[in-house]
Length: 452
Image (cartoon, rainbow, N blue to C red; front, side, top):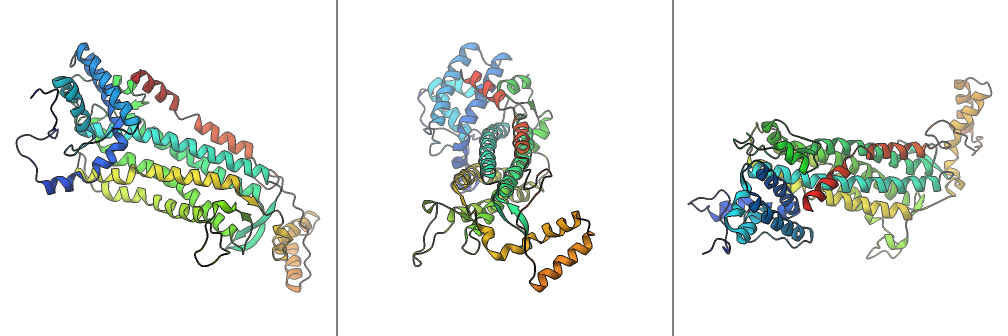
């Protein structure tokens, strides 16, 4: 049979003995499913690799041109969701190589020179993570903007602040919305660290010990828009698992902020609080209680984000007792890592949608149960008039005990970050300064150049 029309594929490592089917099922696991997420990234890595191979004499120009053309076709298939890993094909690397050999014969078999599936999957995961981090960062920024906008809209509406879940001191919806905006702005710093660790090129480390071929690793680093390479080939391999743990730690930071916000929202929409209200179409009902309007989106966001916060620990437990070198254990991190971005971004999108539509109760403080939250304001007023603080504290406390306390509900906070001086512009600038440090444009330029 002509090798250009060959319909079946051996595994990249298979020689004369076929592996037992049960062993194959167990060892492949969910790899084929997870690899669909990596397909276009695997192709992009191959394009950079073979461009480098031609430059060092391991491919001819006549071989490179059709290979690049076919790889671009496969890339677009993957982008359109039409790429599939066939039955009997082990992984994305094998499928791409099979598709090339069907079209180009023995030339397709040359793309693996100087690399291993180890550095291929390292590269695929980094390219995938790089794209997903960008999507996450932009989602975080959109949510920050929504929260700051709501903070400005409701900055003059007071609400109770709590300590120990007891009514404590005056707060405002300006403070509440902006608090989560600044928390997310801090989370961007975690994502920036994850980006910097991710955006280093492992290609050329092969199975973790380099290659006797004269590879040009600087060239593939530039072709793929990386900031630098993983210099030491052993460390490049050791980065498998470490990168995933680092990135999921950053995702967990965002998830923690969303989870806390979701808890507040669930509590504040309840009848006992009644601080905020969701549009009816954003709530769900009960099968038995016709009056119910449940904040299910926030409840599910809380649960999903709490689950996401477990990911760094799960990955740590897989990789923390492995010595240097490659082990099949590392395959298991894919199943945790790859779906995490979609779940977090879904939660962010829903949270943004909900927060943009929330209606605020502007008459919370008409309820006398909140009168005592102005006690500190009264203590401070008396202190400013010359009464020692401890004496003023005692006077107000006795008035509360005797039922004679009458709150003055006017609040005059002027320092940075307080009710009267939210510093929302500074929070927005903090976000923008962090965003500017991500090298997204460099990646886009390199990718476009490679594809075009």
